[in-house]
Each structure stands twice: as C-alpha cells, then as structure tokens.
Image (cartoon, rainbow, N blue to C red):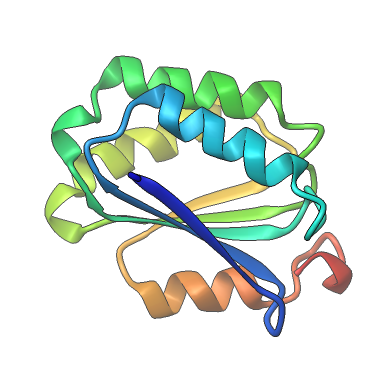
Length: 134
C-alpha cells in the first residue's frame, strides 16, 4: 500500500509514510481514515514522510487537489501541525505546495521540511495553539 500510518503515543504525533506511485484518491482516503480513527484526536500533529514518494505523480493538478481537500477539512484539523518531509532532490514540488498552502489561509500550520530531525522537532514541540495539541 502506498500510504501507511503509525501513531507514536509517547510523543503524541502521527507519522504517515507515502511510497511509490500514489493517487490523490489514495492520499485523501488515508487522510479521512486517520481523521476518523478514534485512537487519537483529529487534531493530532502529523509528520508526512514523502521521501519515498514517486515525484512523477506530483503535478499541478495533484497539488491543487491536495490543497483543496485539506482546505475542506480545515475545521477538523484546526490547531494542528503537519510537517511534510520531502527528498531534497524533489524540492521543487515542495516549494509549490508551500506557496499553495500559504494562499489557502488554513487555521492549522503546515510546513515543508527537507530534514527529518527538524520536521520531527517542529511537530513535537508545543505549538502556539497550546501544548496539549503538540
């Protein structure tokens, strides 16, 4: 399966790993599943590891669909943080994704990272929205 997730209760974050070829439907189905899973709050912070994702599937239509979907569920994910970890060799689509999320004015924080340690530190640190959400 191109999308897997693991909840880390000790640090209170969800790690989602995307691998290989992925469709927008695969991704949005996974987002819906983890939002509706009763094992954690829908506002849990998340680390999205996209380093093994086939970047050939990431085009403008994919990015726009992702941002639209994420905007539609913004109230469910309010006050959460999502770190999107990408391979530095494919940073171009990360830059475009960052620009699109900035334009969408979400109530949650979403950032793109090239370094796993930095992404994990940001996801696990207390946010400005309250330490209970970190």
